[in-house]
Amino acid sequence: MRGTLMLSWILIICLSLVAVQSQYYSKTLPYHPRPVKVTKLHFFMHEHAGVTAVQVAQVNITGNDNNSSVPFASLVAVNDPLRAGTEPDSEVIGNVQGITLLAGMNASSTQYIDFGFNTGKFNGSSLSVLSRGEPGLAIVGGRGRFMMAKGVALFNPVLINATKVIIEFKVTVIHY
Image 1 (cartoon, rainbow, N blue to C red):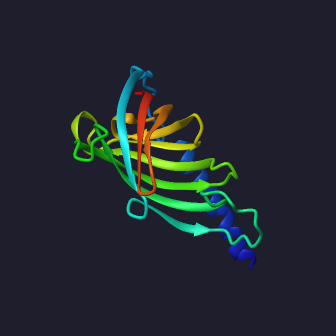
Image 2 (image 1 turned 30 degrees about the horizontal axis):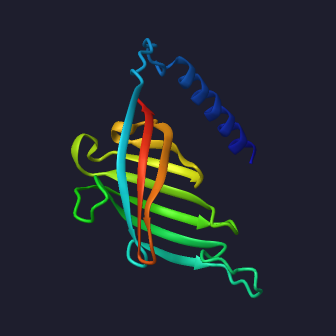
């Protein structure tokens, strides 16, 4: 036991000396920040109930407290196309994927969604949103051309009926 303890201390001392005497550190380079860019986007989300937005969970409420058309504490998964216009045959520029938690008795929601773009200048880029749903959504990150993004996505419902929802988005993004 004493020999093992002595060997352990010798090993720790030797490893400490190697780390101190090695060329572990690199030369410091000057910091050159990339210029800040502001991008404004305009697109439409087309949602089809039961097809591109599906309820995956709901709380079991036994009382009469759940009289709203939007059930309290429902979790909805979304995978909706993003289009350039309101028409159903307008160009698809990407999609929105994520989850929405309907957590308020007045149909308010908390959302984690990702706007992914697959055409044009922003092909392969996306914007991440984590926000409550009123009056706009907070952009908290991105990837691709929207690296380290922040901003706001203001939305305006264009059409809401029993089977279809079209929402207009006006997005302002600050990125590098």
